[in-house]
Image (cartoon, rainbow, N blue to C red; front, side, top):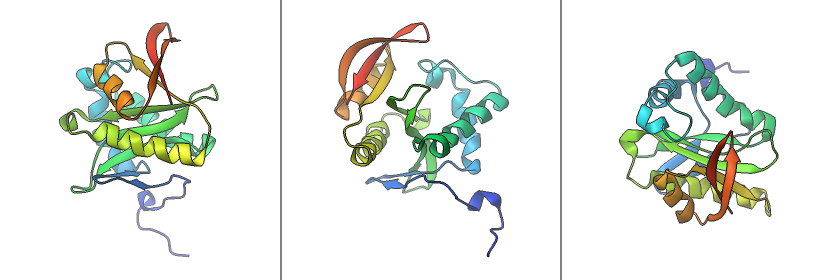
Length: 176
């Protein structure tokens, strides 16, 4: 057996890789963490998802839990890599919270906003999941003021079904 030089080179997970015209959705890697932590600490980027994460310990816990969903539930978060640069520019995921409903989410790092990456990545994740789990309902919980995410949801064919109480806040519930 050949042992890789670095543990990060060893990928033993059920995480599928998906390609779009400009993006690769792939497994999270330890090398992605610094950019994840920087984005997590960005107040503007975090305003609709619980605020900034200002300490690296909490950021690390969130980062590894994103990868762990694949092992525990067969669904989780992908790193969104820009094919032309090889740089991770955000995350997209189809995941389950404690309830059995599948949820889709996306977070593109602020320097890459406005390039259409979120709907491109989310559409690929949604299509892959719908093909694999035919007939299963997928939701998106979106903060009422998050017009950018509302546009993404609508671009990928999701419909607003009304309000949902999420941890004491009323969000919009989008469904596909």
